[in-house]
Image 1 (cartoon, rainbow, N blue to C red):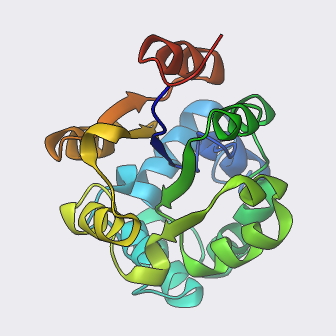
Image 2: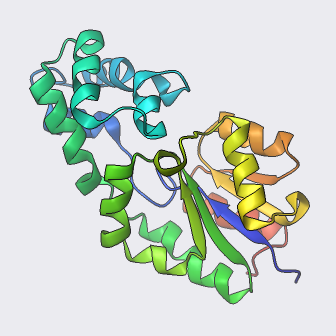
Length: 211
């Protein structure tokens, strides 16, 4: 089997990302039920699209306190409560153990493992110290450290240059359809992540992971 470079997203792939549950837990007065929490998350995260206030936090152009002030205006939540919400998120980004179990198997196949993640620097610093799965990765790119975000092409260009990627020998695993579309437009192989079992099946179907 020819060695490949497997590029992992982190949030909702290797890390649990459940913003609705998080909003209900941390902002119960504003998110008393799943419907209200989902509406609040839309006002806060705006789909994480480039240009959204939160996306600029991912890009590294906004710090937590100014972010809370900006989000207060668009969410109706007090800035102090939002700052608590923002600062609490890293502790809730727990490892998805079923996905993490794929890493040693891919490494055993001889594949190079790297990550490409939209992640603000305060979160990435915390996670690098706390999540054991990073030991399987040769390298990675966090958006907040490079001032670029997915799905914009420049962060993919940086990955290609930094890791000397051959698109046809690169598989990208991400839950976001927009990120997948950019990777495919650049000639990368791509798997839109739904869950670990589906990801494993897709890797096997591509011939990049043995049964």
